[in-house]
Length: 351
Image 1 (cartoon, helix red, strand yellow):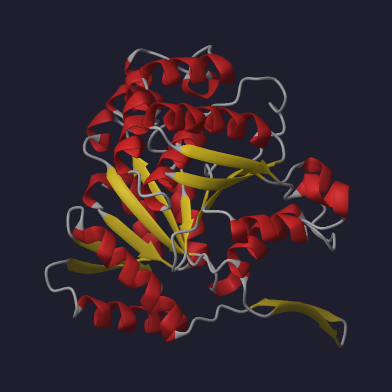
Image 2 (cartoon, rainbow, N blue to C red; image 1 turned 60 degrees about the vertical axis):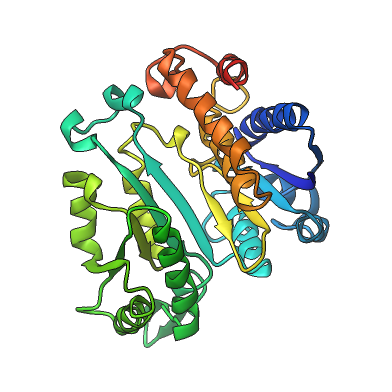
């Protein structure tokens, strides 16, 4: 297998965790007889400082030409002015939009070796294996927004807009993924209030009619938020719109005890995908060599599985991470003392 992989280290701890995941991919290539070519490109705050743009043209071009991209994180206090014309997250939103990456996959599994790291009681964590499918290029984040002032009153607005086609493609993906899992899809909306959610629910029912072997249930977003912490093992595949998915997946990240262990994949119609840990740039620990690389390494495993179709290699990386955790290897966020490099060493030794 030959593959070109674009590395987008970004800001804060991004470069540290991307480098760790890159070393894992290099080990996979060496052991499997593959040839992975890596190129590094700017995005986010570092790109703003260097070029004035959060997504330089050469970064977008490199991603278009690559088989997959691995991202670290974007943002930080240096660029935190909400009124700034150019912000780091604009680079990530533009990249998703330009590459048609409409679905964000966030698996949330609780390793039995990390139960003590979670704030939830162990009995609530048994069997937790959720796959969130979040619509990524529509809704409030991409709808018309602005501010107006009239008669001394300032008014701000953000518009949630969805077409039936946008909903259908992400719900279809959720059903296809559920077919290889426990055959249950939970569609999350706010259909008792929002017109866009009523359209979402109608399309979900339509899609479910083409997949009679898979159970569909509807869940209002507020009650879903409660169920995530009271009965998380009752979920299989959860599909929802952009903002709901953003909030619910961050809430679910508390289940395994740390944002540092969770990966994600952003996918479109083709094989290309953008892979990144769900954590932020953590500027308070950047440059100290103590960031947890597990989320990025597991994102690299998703890259192997979804974009390169190297399922055995992906499983080997995931198994190596599990073995490392089983051995007691922990970074600071998990209550341990290992730094990024030491945690990486344990994982690569287990690979």
